[in-house]
Image (cartoon, rainbow, N blue to C red; front, side, top):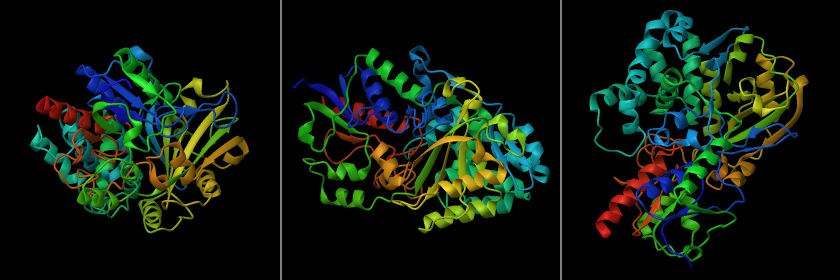
Length: 475
């Protein structure tokens, strides 16, 4: 068998990020992928009708666009182009009203009444200092390069959103807006650090917008793959790895897998204490996802919603908070918080002329098999009466189908682990360097390591950096 310096198991964005970083240091690298396709959750398919392009997994990618590592790669030279909507986010409210989150902070804040200044005070510092603080919080625990600026961000981010809303804001509309942002973390809004994702996503909306890859999420994977191969990397598809014996000889192995998959891999002699920590790793909620081919744009009551590719459906803080708590406690919400994306409004490559695509999901208990199509469509109809009349065809994915798309999504958990404060920087185990395993030359580079879920490549980058430093000591 051909020998390599490094073998990466899994071709998700983190796998590619790790592999590319190693290639940049002159190592030979092979990526092994179990499926016939590459990219994990970052890919696109014709899920409904011919000519309609749907993002199988993630759709909107501000973290990929602003990633401290991915943004340094020449992916534009390998075909990646970005699209932007006029407003990054729309949040319709009952009664026909709607909030728009614009890249302009003041234009956003002016919609928030008494919370105008409080909102600016919350978001402005992290927008101004994103480039300085992002490398610090998008990684493992370490001494920050900008401690004071990071502390200013962290003191707000570490709070439960329920507390932040109570002490900082007066308007129900502001609280609903932040709840929609926070719920991306798939945590109850009373949990510590639930404000963090709201601040990150809000900061990115104002810093860079919420861009999407033109032509679909597959464009991110294709660009990463093209750049990887241009550096001399190799990819082998249809190659599941169930045993260490399945791998060619190498000096380093980096696994872009969930902890459970590492435990299941034969021939890896992990010490009992480490195995026990992996067994105790906490996974989060799952999702139920629907894709639609549409005859026309979604008929929102408030037409301002058509200015945004992303729409959050939850009329109030209380409604979103209740929905997230239900799922966390193993119940299905009858009126779930829904994340809705309609990229075809701004990307004509997604559907035949005059037609459209849409994508939405709600959170459900892990391993749920309940069909949430009606509940999701009811929530859309609430703000867009007549939505069902424009559906040409739909495609659904329950948690089992989500896990089949990417084995890392245990029970439908697209974050590859609960984003709780205890797992934010120490996932999957409690140790200063979470990417290194007790087995020499074996590393974890999946989103089960810091900073967790999202298409940003930082888990892979940090794992590769660890491996590079270890190799310098060993040889």
